[in-house]
Image 1 (tube, rainbow, N blue to C red):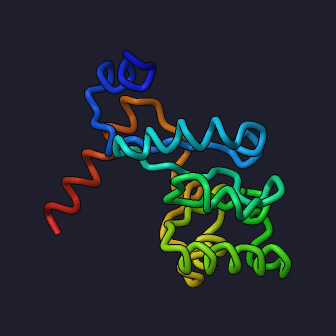
Image 2 (image 1 turned 90 degrees about the vertical axis):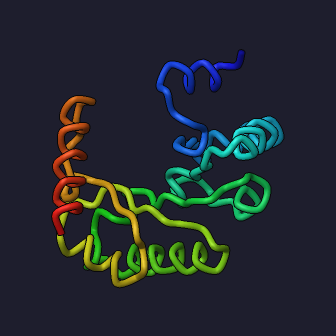
Length: 155
């Protein structure tokens, strides 16, 4: 049994509930090996996410070769939004690229409402960072999800 299978069994999750995040720099170091391993996980249903996009050398070849379904914009490009024009242009380009390739995009390090609104206007549908929520342990995460599910059900 593979490590992936053991992790699924221990968590009671299906492969479709799993996101595998791989950084650009790690992928570049072992492209062929990473491609085979990630394609196998993708075939099982796991979502492959290219993390820290733009932090390394942003190889477009990786997006073509790996079974990537999501790009994560590195926090370095989010931190000074919307004031810093070069970061704004980079975020706009990544969101546009993702849209053209039918990929989802998550912005990392969103810490202000202004950053969140700027990214939302660009079409970035997912964000993570302290403005969304501080890191939670498992019990607090379950409690928060339960409260949000109850609120949605009541609406």
